[in-house]
Length: 181
Image 1: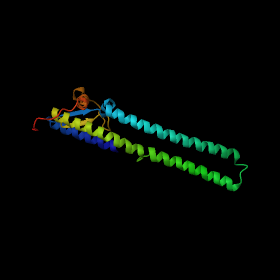
Image 2: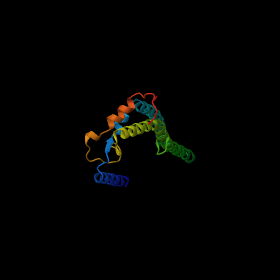
Image 3: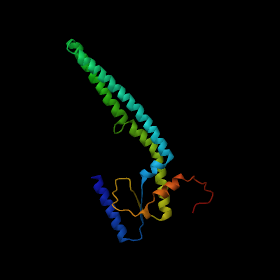
């Protein structure tokens, strides 16, 4: 449904552009920029380290559950009803702990999602600011992100702003001593 509305919006914008030839369209690829930005790479390393730690803990918990289940399975015929019920309850609790841990760390609003937003938001803000600067300097009215949900069936490379945005991001900022216009 979201894709359909995006396509409709693009078609409307293109239609308006055709009617008013004074408007200038451009596009860029945010994924390509993120792959080349040092701070985005550092953020990704931090995220990868967290994921590795959490995945290791999850594997440890799953191995513990498996070991206890195998022990239970071997011994269930000689266990008393009470001991069997206790072992089954312990297995259910361990299984629930695994599910809770997975959701807490990797779930929709889990720690990974939150950490990813914390680390990537400043990077995304810088990209957006650089894009705005390039668009204003070059006189673009509309700029699309080629890596997003917008489906670009054809793109003319001369309107690709990816390198210009990346150049702006990688160029050290100069102190502004001249008055603003």
